[in-house]
Amino acid sequence: MAKVFLSLGSNIDRARHIRAGLDALARLFGDLAVSRVFESEAVGFDGDNFYNLVVGLETELPVGELALRLREIEDANGRLRAGPKFSARTLDIDILTVDDLTGTIDGVKLPRAEILKNAFVLLPLAELAPEAVHPLAGKRYQQLWDEYDQASQKLWPVAFDWPEGE
Image (cartoon, rainbow, N blue to C red; front, side, top):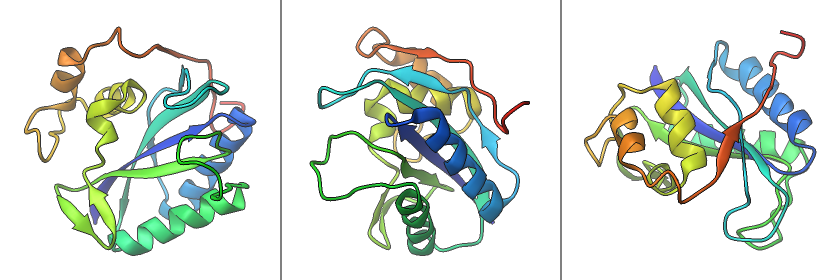
């Protein structure tokens, strides 16, 4: 079983799409490790704020099959792919890491570059797996967060319950 970290984000009907994404991931993979949910400003375009979080799970799926399943979850939640790269999203699910794999595997570049670039990925990953080590940087995620320019991107935790009512 491979240990996988995913990032989830939404800025269209955010709570509903994040919950639907988590529900779909739980149905496919069972137990999930889930970070707090953070709200952040859109990066790369003017748009509504996003909800972002990181999920840890284990799977035997090859990277390409995992990517396909995640795309199906996005599509089931109304994800439109015709627009610009940086635009509003109903649900965005990205593979951050799969064990310590590096390079392009089944068309997926690992680890995902956004880990080191975006606070809305690095902070929830550092909270969820502070002692895990970035496969290329060779540093723990907590250390990477401590060294990150935390004033460069605004984000804040939001009240969010999943499963709903818990």
